[in-house]
Length: 190
Length: 255
Image (cartoon, rainbow over all chains, first blue to last red; front, side, top):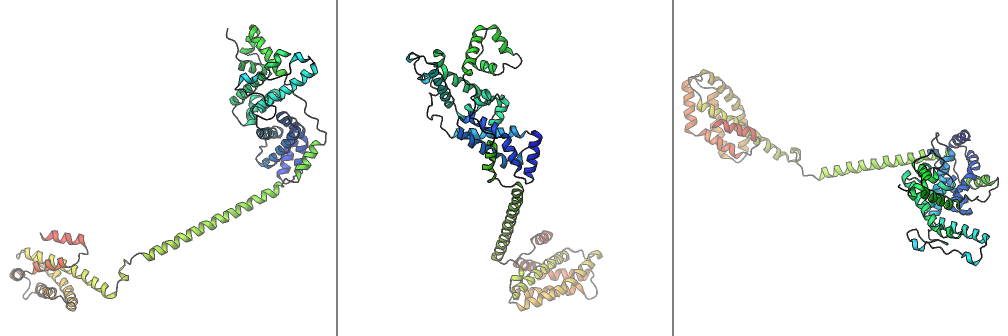
């Protein structure tokens, strides 16, 4: 698709706006998947996809022909998703205690003694995961998603977030440390 | 044995498929770190990539449909840029032209407001007076030099006589012009001095019987007796100094 992408970009820059449709159709699914993992919300993910393609079109004349359009629009989508979740305060609904306050990391999970129902526990785990992810800063959450779920390298994460590789590495470390602290109560229960 | 830090464990976890490094070798030997790594894997395993809600095959087309209306054609946008740059260029050029015109006009105004400093701005009579003073000053300078040379001239030296006579002839004409000008003004002292100077110059220029030693001595005595040289110096000092460098040179020559 690389050659096709470049041909489409050439056509767009020559005035054929409709050629951008092919690029949108081809990359929408992957961008939606990424956006959903970062935002955790279907509606936000769709907004991110649209915003990414819109920004991509506006910057298309600065696109370097030797680059891969998929990687390029992926980076734009990461920025859009980061902007999106950056708008949500970290202490939103369901936020667990802050990482700087370890004593409050004792998340109140349903006591196993109330009924060791595996289904219930599974639901609690999912809820706790979600809260743990919400406890991260937007940059930490994005870096973790890219590293852990999208299997991106530190260099790719740094490029997508526009930061130094070492900073990206530290961001991933901080995210994992925070998540593990939040999950500590589960270790006892499982 | 130094155990791995949490950061090293995390790095090791994410790079476990890579070539074995120091951390992975350590994990093979250290039970405690291997357990810590297993706990880490267990925790992170909870964060499995959840499958996003499925999008149907038309999702991309829907995204495009929602975007296409708001995207400008690149050709059109490219055309718009030069137009903007032309307009901005013209604006800059107009602003520069206006600035230059204002500066020019301000310069003209400034120039007109300056006090008149040229001779052309003076009245004709003042200008004439000024010219006369310059000529008179110059004439008195030359006359003073001639009188000094005459005073110290060696009567027996024929080499001195001829330049003195030539200079006297030249000064005689100038003296007549100056005397006529001075007569129109109310300055009897200057007029009288120029009269006596003219008499001396006439005798020096055209001496009866030639300019010999006797004639020269007689003229020297005549000049000394009526203090003509002193009087010329006094008169010269009354005239406003127009050429200080030349005046100082002439004064220096008299001493």
